Length: 122
Image 1 (tube, rainbow, N blue to C red):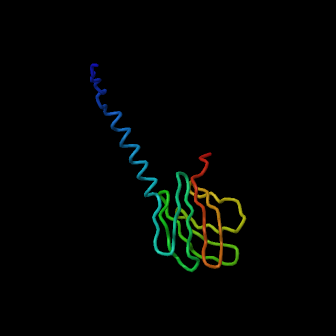
Image 2: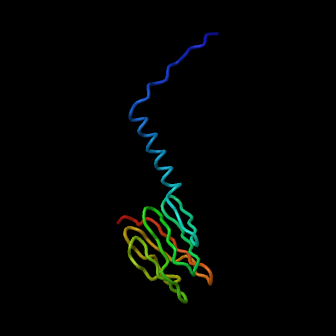
Image 3: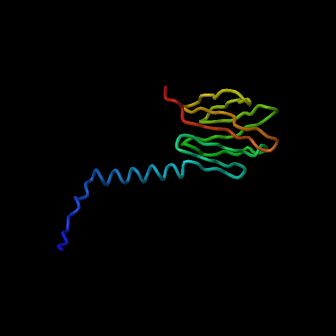
């Protein structure tokens, strides 16, 4: 029995660049959400759910933008997303701002949860 050594093709700059791009995208997904005390984030590939403690004025950095709870009263909340203030109501369709859609997901006596997703691009 003969063992044959088959050489691997040389690494090309294109192959190496592809590897680095893949690693960078993976890191971006993992670091795409950041938050302060009183805020939690749960991010996926194209959107994040941001949950604020209702009595805070904290902000979160998500998908390259900032999201901040301004206030909440009854079934409405005012948030600032991508530098623009929005007033959202429970059950309202998504509001569009800066290429993102923003929806009020949940509103309780203690917390406010919004969904921020990348827009349709259309």
